[in-house]
Image (cartoon, one colour):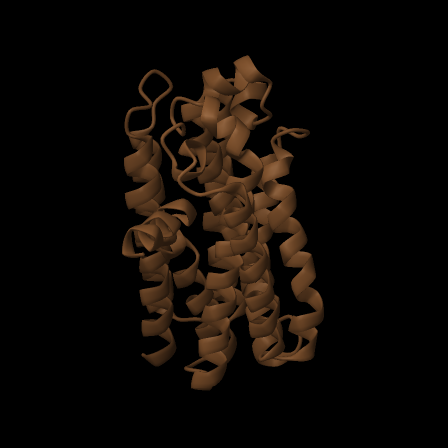
Length: 283
């Protein structure tokens, strides 16, 4: 039983929740200018966890045939058959229901909009079959996180949640492009759509850099619109250093450090942002 649970956690890459959760918490503090009701905070976190679990389960279910052929992913639980297709679909459906239930416990507007999120979570893994801009679909999912937080807490969309959403959208789209560099040869051979497969490695890296520059611009705008202080902008400066470092790790002729850039540096980006948002709100 414990081994099965571990397999499910590996399937959905539960540890990667660290990318989205700190930004969601940051948006809570920006919207509320402090700590919200504990109950609302609980349901926001639950909604995020269940939405991400649903997305990963649907992703693995839809991509299982491709993952079996890809040397990088052939040892994943879904590709090796350690988790059956019906289990992945069941996990996705149950998580979707729990996501909608969490949204319901926030407010009715969040509940009625929750199917839109689920639809996007289904479109993203299918997107690599029809558009090279599939990374932007994932970006749209992340754009909705602070917007959804604003709806959950206020019942309407705060302007700062829109700029933070755009920052998150370009941030995740950028590192999704960099992550896709690992599958460049495979995607070209099997007709999988992606920005690297369409434009080549060099141009894909430049596009990712531009997206992360836009991330920097939009976190600055978020601070200005939300009337945040000096502490926040110090944090933004540090965050920008991590983004620059991430791109220094990845070179056209050396992609060996992609995992370090993706799993380590990006985790620090979201955590640093959250810490300085909270500090600024209180100081």
